[in-house]
Structure formats: C-alpha cells, structure tokens
Image (cartoon, rainbow, N blue to C red; front, side):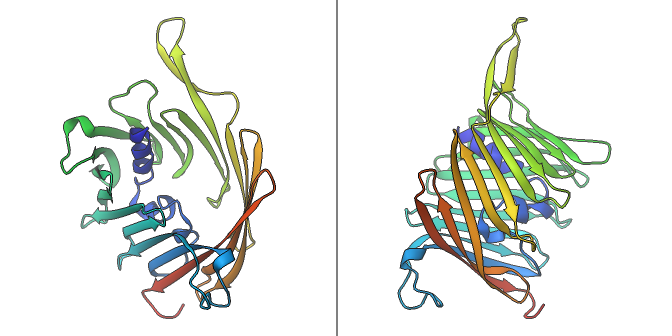
Length: 293
C-alpha cells in the first residue's frame, strides 16, 4: 500500500506547468488566479470561530497547507501540518530549461525522492526512492516509463518492474482520465475546460485466466463516486459522494474574495448519510508578486 501511495504522488508530478494545480490535492491551490507568490490555507472549526474577522477568540485549528511559488511561477515548496502532529515538507527542483528534475518529500516517518529523466521536453522515465531511516536502498526504488501519442500527449505511465497488477495512469489531452494503482481503479470525467465533473473508484480484481496468464480488471460496481458542481465563476460549490451506497454531501459558501478574484474565506458544510453535519471555515492568505491586479 505504501508503494501505491507513492506511485500516485509521482504520477501527478509529471508536467512542471501542471504541478501547482494538479498535485496539491487541497483547497490551498484551488482555482488560483493572478501572479501568486504564496498561499497559506487554514481550516478551523466553525463552532469556535467568532466572525467577523475571527479575532474575538482563537479558533480551533484543524489543518493548514502553505505553498510557495518561485518568481517564474513554478511551484517550489509545500508544507502541510495538522493538529494531530502530522507534517510533510515537499520541495521541487528545476533545471535551467524549467524542467522538473527532482521532488523531495520529507515526513517524520521517512523520506521520498522523485528523479525525472527527459527526452527533450518530455519526461521519459522517473525513479521513486523511499526510505524509513536516513539512507536510500536499491530495494526501495521503482522506475516508471511514460508513453505518449503522436501529438506528444501523455497517454500512460507504467512501472518498469510490474508485480501483480501494474500501476497505470491514462491521460487525455493532458488530463488524467483513469488511474489504476495497486488495488484501486479510478475513472475521471472532465468538461472541455478541464474542470473535474465526476470520479469513480473501483476495486481492482486479479487472477489467472484459462491460459495461465495473470490478468487484472476493475470490479463491476464503483465503491465510491464523487460528482462535482461549480459556481458560475468556476469555484467548487458542491460535492456529492456515494460510498458503499451511503450518500454524503459537501457544500461550500464563499464569503470573501480578494482583488484578483481568489476566494479568501469560505464555509464548508459536510452532511453525512445519517444527517449529521460538520461545519468548518477555510481561510486563504495569498501574497502576489505585484500588489494590484
């Protein structure tokens, strides 16, 4: 499972121009506009947040994510932490041609390093190394190869040394449309503008066929499906989730925007299948390379 998680992280890091919007699966980088230098995103418990300004009492902290962009707009650093004490520091390194060459991910439980190798502007292969102490070992390394169509669109990523079900990612016009990682098989649906409309997760089944060859295939029924709905301005408005037959709904209400049109505060309401709700406030503090839009 650890290997599958690392592969998933690596697959989202293939194109330097897309890293800022695709890899950070958090509200920190969601829909950013303008010459952003840094974003500090914080989630707090709404029941302890005495707005206006959340200054009357310190709100109960849940988690935060801080991301930094270089002057040329490339994502350079991320730091995540939460009230349980988890912490992750991610740094990205580029060459003079603005190509992503290395990602280093540091956690209390171990480190992960991604090294990218190019054929011109295209990632040809990349290597993932992870460790649980201070040194990397050959046994903790996996290499992945990228496959493209005639128009140089990324089609798939496959592990060089396949064990059981291979780790595969399929792309369409630069957007991920399917992921198969270990025991999971995920299908994505996007609109022409690239907004995610739906994703469905299936368990991957495997076994020997009548010819004695190992086969892998997705299950017939999705164990989890998410549908995404947006405001007229393109901000996420609602997520409808069905997990093992149970329905959950998350809605977002936007309360503050800055001069560049980026939201800086919104209220998130998560309604569980039993009707109970969890309400949190999300705050984004954004700095720019220029002071005015």
